[in-house]
Length: 64
Image 1 (tube, rainbow, N blue to C red):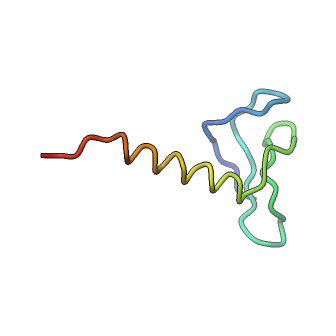
Image 2: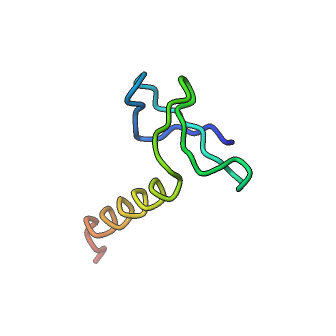
């Protein structure tokens, strides 16, 4: 597992750091680094981050 700070907060304790699995033996659950509460599945997090990335690239003005 890797501990990362995300622009999310735990619905149980409000913490902003989470454990992400880095290999298949660690499963697919993203968990709060403070209280270990389940946050989401890694695939769901990846989809959400990809959508945010696409939105930000659309919102940026094109350089002249």
